[in-house]
Length: 436
Image 1 (tube, helix red, strand yellow):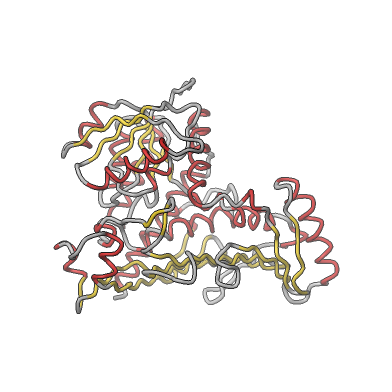
Image 2 (cartoon, one colour):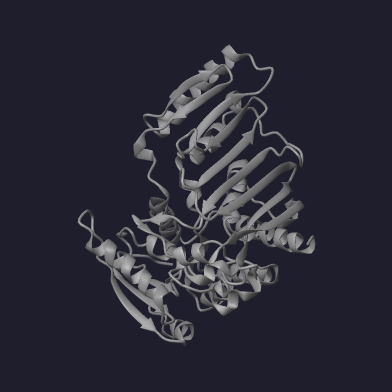
């Protein structure tokens, strides 16, 4: 696949999620400024176009995208027939996302897809087929894993690879996993400085997907990426021990606040009980990869007045635990802690940790240093310049994808690990539903 200046031409397909717009928050040297948009008529494509116009008209570092919009009920068929670009961005309603992915790669188009690529166990084989077809067609299919670029996660991974500090990853147990990734989110939030308006279908799990197959995609990905860096994980390496899901209940007033609608659409009637909209947005999975026990958990609240979304992550090593906390104590900012395990020579441990931070971490991320909070807890101090925020991570992911396009390949572990990741989420959903 030969690439030259401006050789990447973006097609944005049915942009129904604000992530579609965030990919274009910046310009890229190798990407044409003309973007072709194929979508059904409605407020969602207009919200996307408004976001792009906001980027184009901002005073600082404005973009200069030229949007060529194709609206109509036959938008997908028309996109496949016209093929005016070579990279399809897919971020929106998840009901047909796997189909969009599969048919796009069949047409010889590269695909950069927002998570999740698949939301039902029934469609998982279609996703497997898409990856096989992508290889045959020599196109790159990739999902947007922004959380790999979050600085505390990067440093947690770095420290876990230093035996003098971390030792080795424990195996853990089903009750006390070696790795835990948990997050709490809000339906009501601010994005690019404005209240986020969510489409009504976002609350229909047949269109958005349940929480156990949606946000957990990031958490499952982080466990694989940190515990087994650049190692191939096949679905045969995975054993799911337990999975559960439960609802977040919303009043009509809450629903109206985040959608702008004054009533529930008819297709949400099946989720309404005693005037409450019951959304299966919460989920938990306990599973084992090889011999390592892991747990992921996601919770959605309507709002959290005291702060923003929260994240918790722990890697249990034989010499220390690496813990990311993002709660009220941390002012809802992620903080990475290093906590030596029982039986450590604390003087020796502190010496090794201090050396690792000053050399390995600060060598890659100048300015990073260490604060001793107690004999049992240290905090990694991270300069503000590395805390770029969730929205900026979309540029980082896109830049990495463009590099893969230029080299005409993905790392050999990426595709099997994506397949394993979605096997975990969809199989867990099946298990959670069977337990009801």
